[in-house]
Length: 236
Length: 399
Image (cartoon, rainbow over all chains, first blue to last red; front, side, top):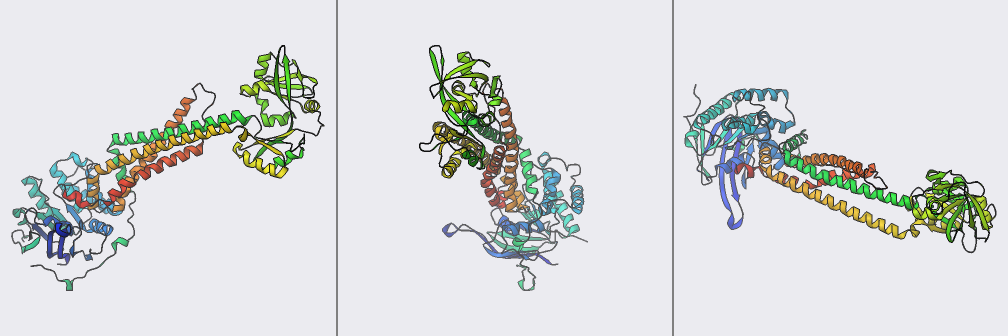
């Protein structure tokens, strides 16, 4: 499969001089289009730092990120904002919905950010996402008037809205019960299979990681393991 | 372990920063409106704050302007703004000076007059009168007497006189009565009262009187073409000094300027204008601080939302524009309400027992509105800047 993401000798150091802290060093890997992978590691291992660098929310102090064929090294804040909007969908542990807006508005916000209004195909996609995520009939509800599970599903729909080639999910089920967690991962799988979207899921829970096709393990700021996982591989 | 192979990859270094702006300038406006709508109490408070400030600005500014206009009108509205007198030892001014004066663009009227002092004796009392003699229509152009007649009619035939209401009341004089005046030539003249005027000033109503041109010429021993002064009115009373200087240079006549004769009044008016300006400036500073602090609080309250929007792809400029739009909406709303409130106060003032009314000038109200909106926009600079600099990672990491 074609390469979607290339992380090349990535390093991140916070602070300078004696106060400098290296959170990540020399991390290198590639992610193919449609790949379903996870990053595991203990709290403080550097996995979220890695996700922030890949998600263009932060800039590396060493190395570079190439996303969808674009070398992001020379991009400023504007360029990174646009590439985020076009190519990446985020699902956070805390759903991070906008409480002032309705479910529909939250769902379609990435499309509105892209070109100011909803095109016909985006409108149809948003309706389809509501159906796919079991949120039919909730479109007009305020985002803070729905349950936690529903909020996380809206956040997933929002991540999918612009048909990104990569979904970055940071502990996406950290605040959900077991039933809702299983439903979310089943949904991720379904989306990846049907739309060819690559997933990179950050988790500290190895049992969740083992449901993905590939596990990248980060320990003390370095990538210590990169294994293909037969357990979660789609069968048939 | 790593699966990178840089030699086989096709990497494109795009210049996304230089790409044309995306066509969604109105999304920040929509977000700004939603932020305001979902904080109705805060929005209402800030709009009220701006409205009160602008209302004070419109009311105080219009009050002072109208008060000063009324004072100036009372002082020199019915009288000459400039008087040309004979220079040197001459006792008369050439009537051609009136034509020269009329060629000045700001001069609305310039008439030749004869001025004299007379004494009216009533029993043991005697009172000096300042008498102006001239053509009735000319006198009306300077003193606007025709609209101030409270008894009798405005006309000046031979040996007829117009007197003020104060004089008429004090000495029991009415139209049709005859007045015997002691004139400068030592002779006694008899005049028939044709009308009684009220110029709105006690001193003028007590001391001024007007007679026809022929009677005044006889009293002063002047010929028919000899006049003691040219009296001039201007469309802009404050241009009198400049116009007077030009006329003095052009004619050589001695010029009397109302501003020189009313220096204390003008000084008082200037002090009043300065204090009014101070009040308006401080009110606007208070409004600006109110808007800035409220927007700063709003920016802090919305940090999380801005961070999320940025993570989703909102640019720094768009994020900053949200608060610029908020300020613009608050500024326009508050200013419109303020102007309405200002006009309401002015309407309320019309019931006050005072001798003048406030007439707001459209240009002043427009300037006040522009200042109100401008102050609101300027107040958004700090929150807009801090918002545009916000890093989404700060919000995402902190949950």
